[in-house]
Structures are given as C-alpha cells and as structure tokens.
Length: 195
Image 1 (cartoon, rainbow, N blue to C red):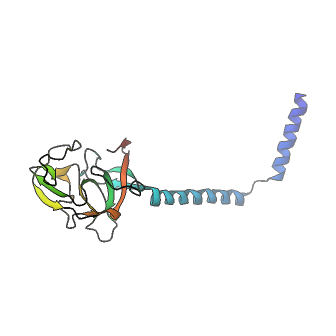
Image 2 (tube, helix red, strand yellow):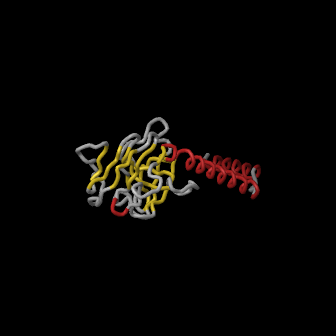
Image 3 (cartoon, rainbow, N blue to C red):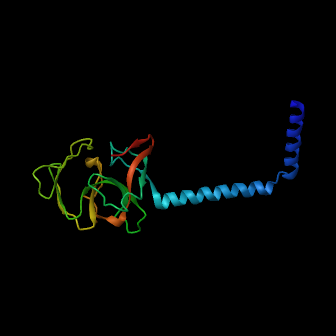
C-alpha cells in the first residue's frame, strides 16, 4: 500500500507541474502587485493614521533625545482636543510654506495667559507654578506674559535653556488645525513611550 500511495502522490505532483508551468511574466506581475499594495498601505498609514518625524536638536531632551525618530497618531485629536502636557508634531508657524515640522510640548491652552517668572511657568496668574517633572534642569529667565488666542496653543521644549520654542518665534501660537499628531513613542535610536 505505501508504494501505491507514493505512486499516486508522484502522479498528482507531476500533473500539477504539467498544468502550471513556470511563467516569468506571471511571477513579475505577482511581485508588482505586492509592491503596489505595500506602497498604497504605507501611503494611507502615513497620510491618515500615523506621522513619522525626526527630532534634529536637543530641544526636547531628555524626553526625546537629539536625532531621535518618533511616531505620532494623526487620529488623537479627531474627537478630542489637545491637552496641556501633550507632546505634539505640528507645522512650525513661522514657516509659511508649511513644510517644517516641529515637536514640542503643549504648555498654554486656548484663552490662557502664560507667564514665565524666574524660570517657572504660571498659568492665568496662579500662585503655584506648573508642575513640570519632565524638565531636565531648572529653566532660566523670565518671559511673557503670552495670552493664547482661542483655537491656539503655546508650545515649549522640555530642554528650556536650549529650545527655540514659542518664546522666540515671530508667530508665537500654533492653531489647532496645524497640529498634525500626538507623539506616542520614539522608535530610534531606542524604543520608548513618550509621556
């Protein structure tokens, strides 16, 4: 019996080989279809679901180190508004071409007044400074006050003494529709969640 079964298997294998001879043309078309599908999926992901950005400077250290790459979610603010403390990718307001992306932390919310006194951030004249455990060192200097227009946000880097952030921009506020994504994690040079 085993000999007969082996013979049948060989016969079936021979038949299938006869029915479907190798076709270079079909193989190439198959690979092209796979590549086109992969490119289409990548474009949809990158344009509608995620944002991939490089942080070239140390302005966000130690939360995000210089030359790191981060992934953000484009879907984070579809049904909700950005919150204070979120690290976001946005269009740099002083670049009128809209091609420059920045990564900073939201400090001032719409309608608030942000004042920096002796390195501490105060919101709306509060007696208590903002609690900012993510700062690598105490900030130096006093800035402001800045009154954030409705629908806009005031951004600052975590490495305040080495960050060219909203304190130094000509257009100091970022409109909500210029925020591209909320940063979720860093994937290069190491993988870590961003808080």
